[in-house]
Image 1 (cartoon, rainbow, N blue to C red):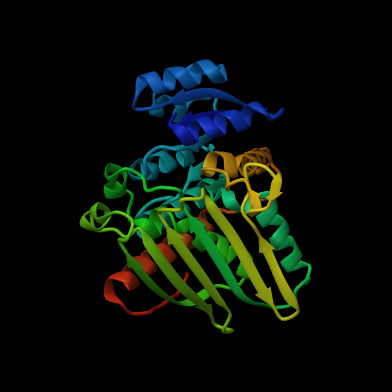
Image 2 (image 1 turned 90 degrees about the vertical axis):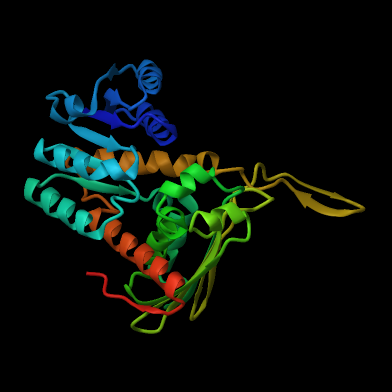
Length: 331
């Protein structure tokens, strides 16, 4: 039985606690949050104790921690968990600083602890099946990957101001997915972006509409487009084109029911946001982390994946600001 401490009892901490309740080989022992009311509410639902972060990091009755706190707190919590020999699950981004991520990597390696980065989309059943069919050779060699990711509406400006920008906050998921599907590192990146949804986002120094082109050394191409607005729901689609055909994963709709009348054919809208769309992915992700922490297969994605996604996000931020392509070295 893996005894888990949850650091951060907001929306994502609640998602992970719900996933853990569905597992037979894990339980939540303790939770912590800067807001006592949030910690108290999650502790009651999870049947766990409410403690402070330091107490969880040093506790003998906690084997692993889930870090779902604000990004600027990740570094210290990772270091503390590694020092205590605890398995670590950390939400993206691991840190806004590549140097800090490398320091975390060294600490995790020295302590020989399990570390998993929270890129839940790898565990979506449809995306995972798509990748399995790529690996099986169903469409031959991959030539072009197209990833579309659009939120139904932008977050508050207060969130935008501390998010690190669209490329580090939102598109970082797509950078990881691009690497996951392409199975070859990218060597060049060109990003563009605009504030078309909300001028306040532009005033805050960010963009809400963006596109990136990535290329590998062998010439394979990935296109990623993001928007903070989609009137029709949470838009999450992937298309992979290869030498012998194409694979595609479409949106998840509210239902599969379709109506046909004299006005045409109509289907339900896409599921509204990530909590519904990726519910199965979050459960599969947590199951994989628990298995790794209990001595199973090495975790994937690991801290190296977190580092490389952050490097791509940093490069995209620089490319958009400079208007120039960036040559990459994902070491």
